[in-house]
Image (cartoon, rainbow, N blue to C red; front, side, top):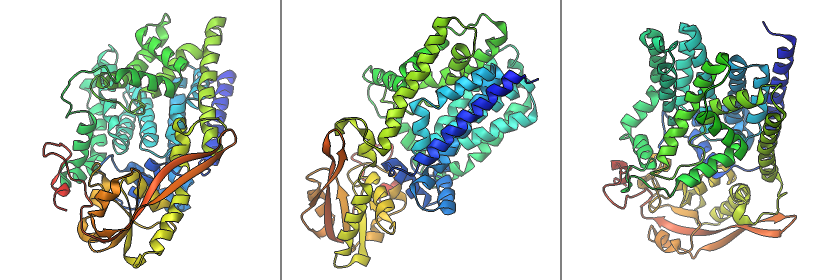
Length: 518
């Protein structure tokens, strides 16, 4: 039975989530696409069952949003903005179920304040779709363990499968849930029931499109994942990356929240017997993922967002243990308020910086500016260059990095199809869309960032003009005119070939026949 106090706390919870959603919708169209977002938007123009880097959900959802709303920044970001709101809602439902309405409210306040979740919402990447799937599977998984109902196990499997279509990190949900079951006397017997396995079967069935795509493309995605995991590294253990991994996690969560989570993992036992199953479940659903990436950081560099799913149950755990008791000692209440304030204080300036250079940062420290400023201007300059070519209708636009090719695809007027010349860089999705036969004999206008690359590019064409330097600036109220980036524009005539990536050695696990057939 819901008391008046609990109902009030739940209304406040939904108000916090609603206001955060409104703020993100208002913010979502106020800055240009970052390179990864433009890349995923480009995927949506080549709909498929899978892609080189990730499963297809990000492309499918961007395709749907842009078809309904048009080709603009908010439409590209809408799936992840809504996805993180759904993730937060499931986190609050889980907190309310395991602890109290007050825990749900504190979960809302913390989750909407940390940089990790704001970034996942406001930058369209697979994480913004993975996280709601994990949160939903985590919530329904707990209900399935408690009730052992077929419906809850099927919902758990459904969200697990949708998560697999979003990002492969979802696979870590399986050992997390397995450990939660094995180390619980009450839930261990669930493994003997067919219901969890039927749910698992549903999830794996939903993953079938990715298997089909990879089977048709020499398992390219799994090769990429193994390479990212450092399978080619000669040294098994190194301590070069672990400090960077821990520092990045602390920055994404805020140091107080991260330290409280570590304390919860290291001291999981609670004095109150009624909350022990709750904390045990949340421990396994968070610590398992974190431990995997912590160990992997002893072998290879880990991107900051890779362990993001650990913090869904992790933030619920922290809010439930440290923020839900209104009768806690004053010191503990002050600690919790400091945790909330720190999270918001670290995030709000970053959000403001996306729309106005309020911080007096040198460009080397302003990643927001480096990733969002000037793409529309660059698109106009490249469009002018193409129109000035002798055969503009037979001139393709290219970048030496897929990021530049994708930004140009979005911001060149008319949003033309573009090309990434990968010959000297790394394999990417353009290898599956473009080949030399499609380009041979055509002229090209392209962008690159490293001086001297014009010598290599010229060899791909019958002839090429000297490069033109392009400088992109922004004006800071503190530091005046700042150089954001220097790029080079080159015009080539009569493409000879060499668009696709060519491995430097035959032992590169990423190499497939596609990279050697031209």
